[in-house]
Image (cartoon, rainbow, N blue to C red; front, side, top):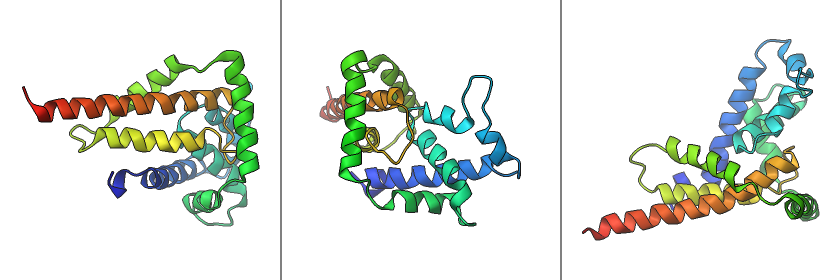
Length: 186
């Protein structure tokens, strides 16, 4: 896997994109109040993002929460600093146990996770040199993210992330077998 498609490179790209997206959401002085206002659905903009299993949405939510504490530094820098030190192992274990208790009760939402991964595969740039490596890198990212206490994801979103890990691995194997079959020829 090339550096460009490693878990770390994807993580850094997502943090940058999330920081820029959060800054766009906070352009006007009143935007800070707007994203914290409770909507008709009973959620704030930040809480709606935390319902999403997508990594970038989770990072945008963290950036928006950090926005009041960043002292004029770019939000992508604040995000990088927030995620620079790993979360304590005990906090990760507690988060994972919480999610696993939901899994025992409700199972993993493979159908929803499959829809999300399917959209991701469709959005993969055509002619990508190794889409399987890209899927494996995303699987590694989500394998770490679903139990990370530094994000505010709901238990339901974390269960989808966990299911995405399996589906991303499966897709990477499917893509790898297709590439091998094409290379082997008729």
